[in-house]
Image 1: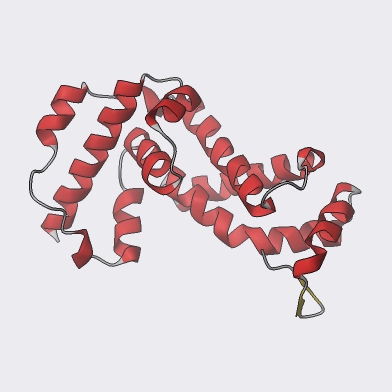
Image 2 (image 1 turned 30 degrees about the vertical axis):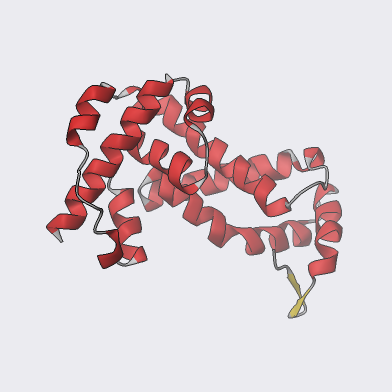
Length: 185
């Protein structure tokens, strides 16, 4: 993570910013916000699918981050610790909307999956992110957690309070939809 003060990178002072932010120093909080907001907004946008919702989650995530700053032990990456906060904030919002319960039987999803290789190589990263953002919320959430964040189906099922088979079917359905949309292009 890069933090800036007087235009200089201060990799060795990340802990100083965290300590100052814990004491309520708004300049240190701003430096942390500036260092993380771009990456965390991208995380929020991937989960929420639209800018307005992503901005709300970004704000809520930073409130949670600064509230829970004392729980950061210093072990591991601060950015990784923060990322979990933003993912969990997005997931809580999606759970409240009850969009994660919309699922299909895994057998139906298997029938939708393509047997042909994916034409993902012919699409730009930006276009792929746009297609992912257009997925229904439940599909998009499981896709992000499994493909992007690296969660297992068991971890996804526990985090979202759904069955492992629902997680698998959501992922299969998301992949099938993405493959179909990519072929249309």
